[in-house]
Length: 434
Image 1 (cartoon, rainbow, N blue to C red):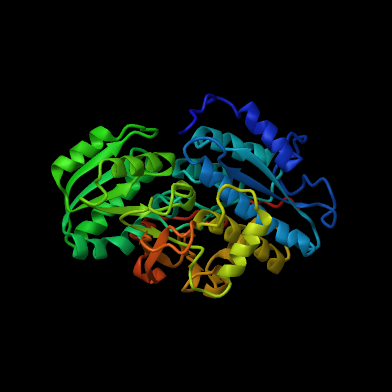
Image 2: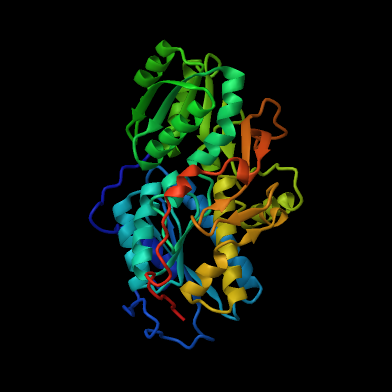
């Protein structure tokens, strides 16, 4: 159950206490984000990463999963001497799944904690809020797990790089197959906020282009815990397919109530993306329908078993026993940004942005089937999208998914990226913490 956030006007005391433990430097004196405000010589000064990840709200589980991924990557670099011979530190605040808190956290990280770059956010409204602050100062921001098509579309920024697949990518991977297999009469149920709304629009556009008829679109308030009225409406409509764009803890509740009413077998359910922290712990029969993902711990690829073993060694007491897609994106984004700093030999934002644009990520290095590319015009990572369903023959109690197919990046490219208009380099403030 989601714990309602009680503080809307300031960063919570709880968040600040956590940050003090996690980051060490939280509450340091104001030095400003500009080049001339350096405190230490470059050879002595740590490279500091701001982790903008939820620990409360409907995406708390995913927020902490991506945080663990980033920290594992940071620790690996520190174990090998850091970057540019300098240690890496991180500061973290709970962004509480609210855009207002995301804005305040980003301002604090840049103007008081003097981070070199920021990364995180699950909820797309929070990510958009953080990225606006980041662009104002020129601080690079890695959106690791927000999947609204607008994040690399109309809300793109020169400093922002989007690492997750988006709602349109997942819809393209699932829609054609679902129409051919289950039928053309579709109903869409979605979370009534930016990600759900944008994903609903993308689902309608993509599905109708393949021949679907959208019978109804059903908005659901964030934080809904009784879906019975919505499910009765669906049952009475008798669609061939229900396409869902429900996230976080809300999706857990919906899934359980669908099972309680026996609707998982009466109607074909097509999920947009299934985040691993939202389902893990519910049992191997919890997943049903068809859905997308970007990583699975039983992908038959070189390096995946080793990655899983590293996770288990680092987090032996975490309730999620194996790494999922959210952890994977947090790890890969942090690792790649630190690699780029090492290669460029600088923390200058413009140099790093140019090095990241068009960067190719080898499939075997990313633990996916196809090479990924950071699109230079939208700053959206074009990557493998997997089509999955519930596993009817699990090999162990972590084996929830059956991977049905993998789509190449060019097959599921998001048309929403055409709406992106990145700021020029000249209009992006210089930002280098030294």
